[in-house]
Image (cartoon, rainbow, N blue to C red; front, side, top):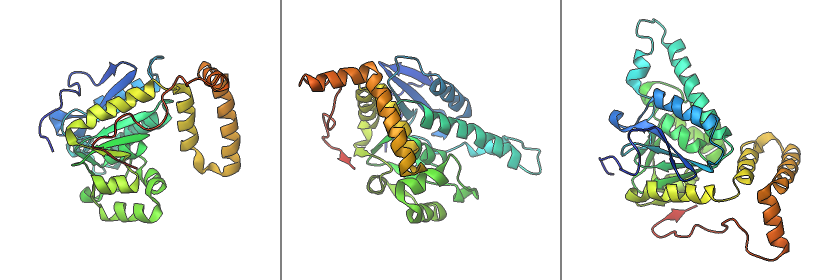
Length: 280
């Protein structure tokens, strides 16, 4: 696990652009990977109203860790004179939850470059992202029991749906640390690559998605997130979404290519290079 910041992740700006990919720094290298609430607010705002030509989002940490959770010092200082810190912590959790909502609701694929530790709110963001790329040294941990807290960031809802209720109970109640292989086996990350390639590979994947049928991918994401509403409602939602997609320029082009028996415009199939990677 490297101890230095990766120059591929900008340190001056929280939200930057690489082509059609919106790159968002979710934690501060100066704070050893802690979630920075000022940065979080900036990323939330950018995800709420993405620029029209943005096709995908990349979440990454500035330093050697993706995100080790909220700064416990900031939590303690939220209202230092209060006998009951609950209201101040509740307010901070509300801001985190607006961030998670933005990640889930942005109509674009969200790729997480999960290098180093993803703990507490960092784990919540990994599970909330659409696709996570991890390094061989990545570690994922709830971390809430260690400071006497219950989880936030949607983890009590997203984790059971990702790994099953029994596994989620085990992980959350025992504060289990998952290594990269376990996170891959459980489906919390989609691929594991060498540590020094995490950001590069995650960015390449985000760029590939950004070059795809972004409106259709956004609808696919929306359908997947609402899949527990029941089959009948999901079938209706799928019918509406595919009709919307067919009416888009993307869909019309895809249908025309199929009819004319020519290659589709958008990339399909496995990623071009899986060298050194393990995937679900």
